[in-house]
Amino acid sequence: MRLFQEDILRHGRIEVICGSMFSGKTEELIRRLRRAKIARQRVEIYKPGMDTRYSPEDVVSHDATSVSSTPVEAAASILLLADEAEVVGIDEAQFFDEGLVDVCNELANRGKRVIVAGLDMDFQGIPFGPMPGLCAIAEDVTKVHAICVRCGALAHVSHRTVADGRRVLLGEKEEYEPLCRDCYNKAKGE
Image (cartoon, rainbow, N blue to C red; front, side, top):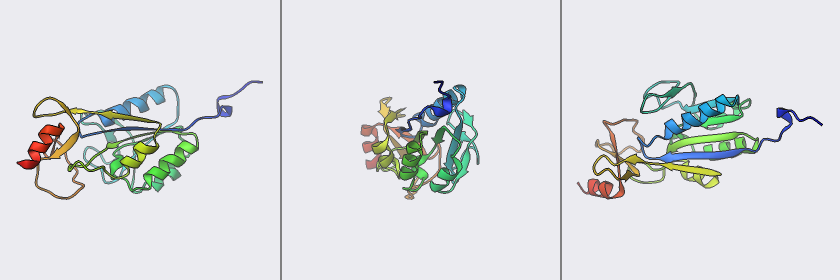
């Protein structure tokens, strides 16, 4: 009996890439998605529609590496759009609604490889959006680190450098800096 690729049961899985700003989360997401494309897998990439920092459509890393994506307003839209995909990439997951956890579970249960990247904490060091739930259900969690701009240690938080109390403030190096625990605690006291 000869098996065709379509006949082989695909095992779905969820991979989470998390960390602070400037830690390489999006670069790692793009790397994994490009490898899936090289393997001739059908890849779809999604990002929150609100994230227009570098491009309204593309997923773009801080070092300007980019890949085409589909912006969506709600996590549930991904279920409708990703039907043909074998690999589903999701960037800036922290900006999605809590329904993203169920969406990723459903996609993995359908046999898809789901790769999610996002901030694990907000600028106050509080777990961010659906990220804690995603880390809990994922088969694989990769925590990446930036370098603390004040002392050179591994950074774990995105410190906001401008006075703005909103939880979501889209920004870059003008608004945020990666800090280690010690430097972050000192900065909060400044």
